[in-house]
Amino acid sequence: MLHSIGTWITRRALVAAMVAASCVLAGPPPSAAQPDPLPSWNEGPAKTAIIALVTQTTEKGGPRFVEPAQRIAVFDQDGTTWVEHPVYSQALFALDRVAALAPRHPKWKRTEPFKSILAGDFAAIARFSEKEWLEIVAVTHAGMSTADFEKLVREWLPNSKNPVLKRPVTELVYQPMLEVMAYLRANGFKTYIVTGGGQEFVRPYSDAVYGIPAEQVVGSSIVTKYEYRDGKPILMRQPKLFFNDDFDGKAIGINTFIGKRPLIAFGNSDGDRQMLEWTTAGEGARLGLLVLHDDPEREFAYGPANGLPDTKVGTFSPSLMDEAKARGWSVISMKNDWSRIFPGPKP
Image (cartoon, rainbow, N blue to C red; front, side, top):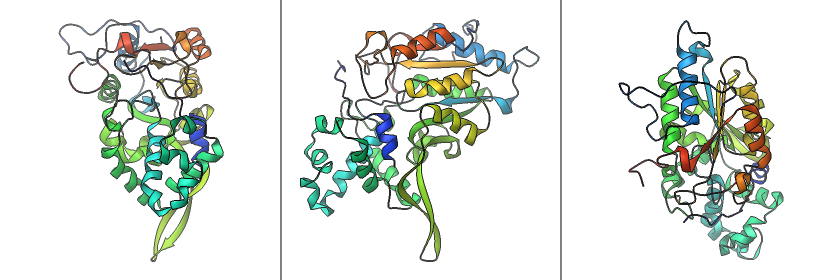
């Protein structure tokens, strides 16, 4: 059972260091004559609401028809489109980078926070302050060009390994969410990743993993500086936060970088609350959905909503559950709504 949940790092700490529906939509399930657009979804309110929104907004002449240019769908990443436990993938990247750089810094074996990382002391890592994460990010994310950073990410991905599931992070994407993205795009929607994680961390793999091009990734970012190296212009990454794309920052980021209010938003935690509020406050057909991690057999179980274990990674609080019920957002149960979780054969 995958019920051992770590509390290694909060999203707010990592970001600081870097430096069911809006309206309940009625709609029938796909007919027997049509292929199921969401085959990894069990029949239920969440699947029905997604199909109903797509049907209503794409039916020409219908009362809720939306022109293709306005069909925007946004997805949080960590915990919504891929695994975030027991540690965010970007935090795992930072920890692995510390290990890779350690031979150049022998003093790290005696100096915190690097001493705990190199010793594999995850209890100590869980207690790291924002100041300590700033030190980690300064040596693993900054002091290099954007091109060099993206190269590091691309090289790390195939060698990465989730410490519990023992698979590369890019294999731990959620098959049901990949199907939703493909279904939306097939119906004229433009899909975006809107994440509290690093924008330049996600962009190197977003197209290959999600079918979402780099320019459709909105994330947190650090300050970059325009410089010349060998007569050529480069962008150098600085150890200072530029934009925090989490909590209310997600609504601000959508407005700033996309410029259109989405019709549908997927999230999984308190950090996605304002993104769903912003999305579903618009006129016409709108849909907000939250993934609830309640499957300790196939993935993880955490909340603390619905009496699930508490966590600092991807917190789904009771107050968020209350708001979801009050606003008519759909809560997706991993255990009940998804017939499989990861790509490949069903478990």
